[in-house]
Length: 127
Image 1: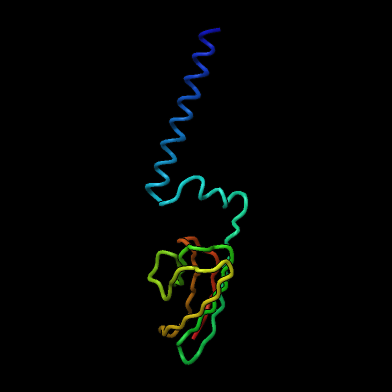
Image 2: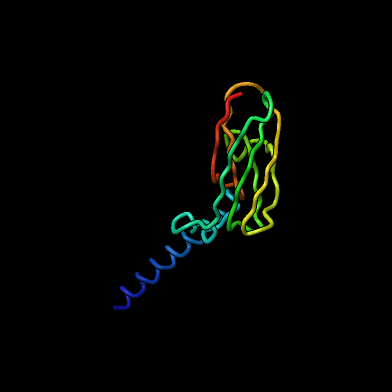
């Protein structure tokens, strides 16, 4: 009986140790922890959308709508959240709207709207 109890407790300590190491590794590599990413499994209340329009030649205007993301950072980048930002800012309200414009080269472009470095929406434009 004592051997079985010792085996079970050793197993639980090993599992707990693996969980703690994975928790710290995730924080170091991505800057997030397990509890922040649970929203991806259950539901992420932070919602955002982007619409693009051509103002003139290759000057683009983006309109963004964001809800339930208070205090987070938003950015619009080309292709991925890690690209240089075309515009960015802090979300100051539960229901947030913003717009910005920039000039780009001619051709097809895909822009992504990211909130706290997580892609929420994308739009493509050709000028």
